[in-house]
Image 1: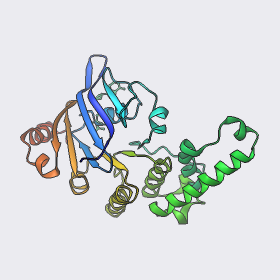
Image 2: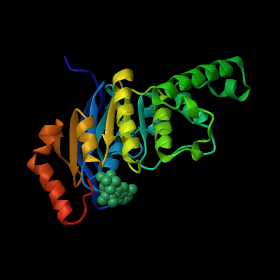
Image 3: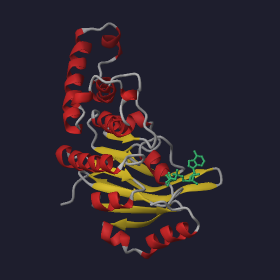
Image 4: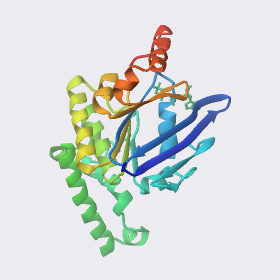
Length: 263
Ligand SMILES: Nc1ncnc2c1ncn2[C@@H]1O[C@H](COP(=O)(O)OP(=O)(O)OP(=O)(O)O)[C@@H](O)[C@H]1O
C-alpha cells in the first residue's frame, strides 16, 4: 500500500491579471517522498510553491493537507498542519542568535497562549523549555550546535541556509518545501546541503519537495521529478523518465535557444 498523501493539489490555476502563471497543476506528495520541481525561468515553480503553502490563493483548484481541504487558507493555518517552507531569498532574523531563530520555528507547535506568555506564567516557562530542547535536537541534526550563540546575520551564506532549514524543521513538519536551497552556495556547501536534505528525509521521515535550478542536484537527490513549462506540468516521473521526456527536452532547449535556461 502506498504512503498517505501529505499534500494533495487538484488542478490549481493562478492568474495574475491576464497572465496565467500556473495552469492545471496537480500534485500528490506522499509521506516520506523526495520530489523535485524544475522548469525554465518563469515556468511557475515559485508560484506553485506559493499556492501549496497558502502564500497566494489559487484562482481555481483545491489544496488538501492530509485530506483536509485548506484551499484559500492563510500560510499559518497550513503551517500548523505540518507544512513548512524556505524562500528563495533567505529570511532570517539577522539580529537574533541561531538558537533564537530556530526557537521561532518551534513556537509554531509548542508556543504557550497569549496570557501565560504576557505574564511569564509557569505554562510559558514550561513551553520555553520544551522549545529550547527541541531547538537543540534540531541543531544536532543540522550540524549547527557550535553556532547556536552566534548572531544569524554574521554567519556565512551556507550556514544561514542551514539555519533557515533548521527553523523550518523546528515546527516538526510532515512536508518541507525548499525553494532553490542551493542558490548562491559553493560546491562544497551544496554537497553538505544535499546530505542534510537526505538526512531530514530519512531520519525525520518528512516529505521534501525542492525547487532547484541545479539539475544534477535534483536528479541525484529526488525519487520523483515534476517539470513545469509555461505554467503547465509537462512531466512527472523518475529522474530517468523525465530526462528522456521529449516535452522536457523541448522546454529546456526551447528556452536555451532563446537564451533563458540556466539549469
Ligand atoms: N505576483 C505576481 N504578479 C504578476 N506576475 C507574477 C507574480 N508572480 C509571478 N508572476 C509571473 O508568473 C510567471 C511565473 O513566475 P514564477 O516566479 O512562479 O516562475 P519560476 O519558475 O519560479 O521562475 P524562476 O525560476 O525564474 O524563479 C512569471 O511570468 C512571473 O513574471
